[in-house]
Image (tube, rainbow, N blue to C red; front, side, top):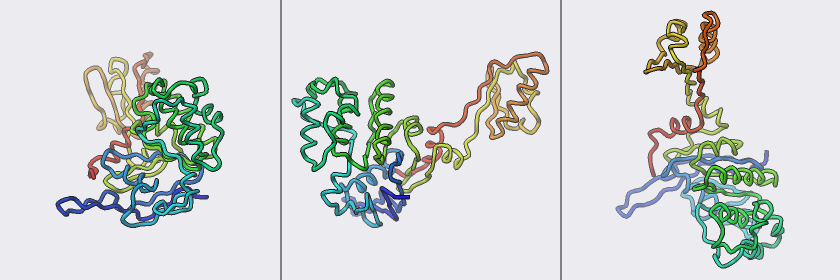
Length: 308
């Protein structure tokens, strides 16, 4: 497996004005395969932005080894710069230029750019290519940011919270664009505060907490690591508490109008409930089974993390 990003023992420390040392990144290992979409998640102050800026070549590390597309981003070549695309949280393209003019201008900075019309089509700006940047909607401006990042035909794209502030429809459209990057063969490192976005887009997820990688894997892998339970709830008017086997009675939760159990034995509990309802000629229309989602997992993994 070829790696687009290979990080070993990465640390970054800062000196405060008072002379104290703050360890923002405390020795992380991170590997991203070519063509992979990795979601890099962390709470504010977890060391996420520091790590990303080191990978992008904007910040020097304190120690450790970093290889991005086969080079050290601390001393990159010009060709390396051309192979990197970056979408920042905020950008300020020239407001007086049209979308096409903006993309064309950035294309001129590269030796072998992707055709401007092709890029505009990829990001869905063909019909708006003649509009001035200042007249574009928020979603269209974000598309323009992505177009500018893609016009150099990068092998690796950094997407820093690309859909912040989008409405649900615009976010879904942005997801389609990001998925197209995989079709183009690009590797993507994505940061986001939207857990559903990470779960939908990423092949793998890495969570940084307190300057350390606390977990890596698919959303299912991470959920397994923290051993979160599935919540089963129903109306006691449909199935009484007595229908639950003695084994699960200690886990039974009683609230007004609802009974619930949090368990890993989902099949056994649901079977007991439906078997009682069937045997007693009743129904259990209120039954709900709620698996833990990535947000639940993330909160468990980052609980008590140090802010740096």
